[in-house]
Image 1: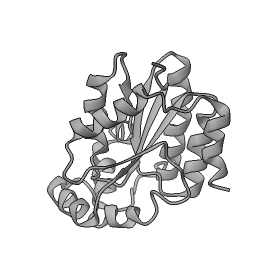
Image 2: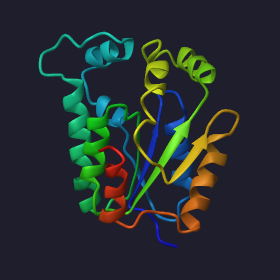
Image 3: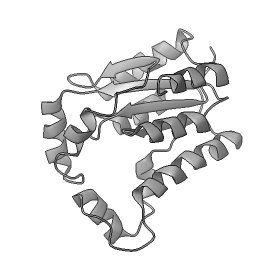
Length: 192
C-alpha cells in the first residue's frame, strides 16, 4: 500500500474535519501530523483570535487573514520536505486559495477529500461551538466545493468521525491516491 504524503480535508467550518483528522491519525500505519489552518491561528495573540472568531476585523496592524492563509500554504512544502506526512484541513473557498494550495503541493502524493454536511446540521454545530462567527458555515457552503475535483467525498451528517476515517483509510488501501505533479495539476486545471 502506497500512502499519500498529504491528505487534504476540504469542507465548511463545523463539518467535522478536525475530528476526522484525529481519528484518521490513529488508523494510519505511519505517523501523520495534523496541521490545520487553526494550528496557525492558535499562534495569534488571544485578543486577535477572539476578534477573528467573533467575525470582527482584527484591529491590530499587520494581521491580514489572506496573509495567514498564504503562510499556511507556504509552510506545507517545508514540512513535507522535512519528511513529515500531513493531514491538513481548512475551508478553501476562494479560487486563488485553492490554486495556491495545489500549486504548493505539486509533485507530492496527495489525497484530496471533500467533507460535506447539510446546512441545518452545520448551523446546529456552529451554535454549539461558539468559537466561529454565526453564519460562517452557510457562507462557506456555497463556495467551498466549487471548481475543485476530489479523489473522495464523504458526508459527516449521521456518520461518526471514526467511520469516515475508516472510509478514507479504505480508499488509501485500495490504492486510490494521486501520484505526484501530473495528477495534482489535474486538480488545478479544474480551476482554470
